[in-house]
Amino acid sequence: MSSFERQIKELLAEQKQTWQVARENYAALGKVQTRAFNYLGRELLVQFNPERIRSSAAKVDKTSLQARPCFFCHRPKEQKSVIYNEDFEVLVNPYPIFQEHLTIPLRHHERQQILPYFHTLLELAVVLPSFVLFYNGPKCGASAPDHMHFQAGNNLGFPLFKDWCGINKTQVWEEKNTRLYTSVEALPRMFFMVSKKKEEAIFLFERLYKLMEVKAEEYEPMMNVIVWMEKDSWVVGIFPRKALRPSCYYAEGEANLLVSPATVEMSGLFVLPLEKDFKKVTLADLQTIWQEVSITEEEQVKIIHKLKNT
Image 1 (tube, rainbow, N blue to C red):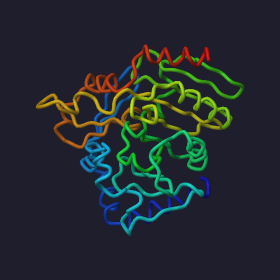
Image 2: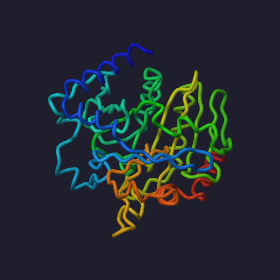
Image 3: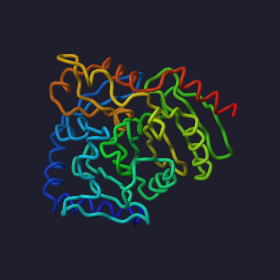
């Protein structure tokens, strides 16, 4: 365990004791219900977590964001932090999905955008080796898209962390210390980067980033990103997206499911804040959700073609 990770573990323990909101919500995780599905040999999990309705139902349109104070600039007095570097600090997430759930905001107010800070995501994975780091794009699950931040959760909470080697994938790019793979046939559509060299990982991520479509009136390609260390290599999962929410989110009556996919859901853990949804959701529903928010197979092939030929 790194000295920085030890500091973070101490922060988690202290906040769970002294901050009532955190204490109650982390205690409630012990009673959270889960269901498991088998998808092509992978385990998908569904978690019933009522406290996460703040995130699942968050309004992230421009008017709503302007009407509320920034979550990170206006914090509860009980919320403490550990400074990481000149740019970022680490907070305990008071509405957790995992028993160790961190939020890592920029120390000044700036919109959600990964490209200038991808190197920090890689560096955080090194100093927090028992965590998975992740990024929700401004239209891909971030409930605070007005303030740049990452998140982290204990690594065994992510089905993808346990199952990624078994996913059917093919190699589409190679450098001396870096390989890029793409998922084949299975959902959600994604890229895997495995790299021993930070500079190569940054270079390849920037290339992919610039090959993805930026929608009208947006400033960043839609994506979720997940990172962890495996021995001496970074494993980076990149989920290109085409939609913020699936059709079931907006449906009426029995067809409605209140699920707004972020990196956690794209990684195989679906968090549902309503018990009715938790009880009725099916594997087919989960596949449809992934299908509707992921890029198409044709779009995936187009990105690969550009990568190989530009």
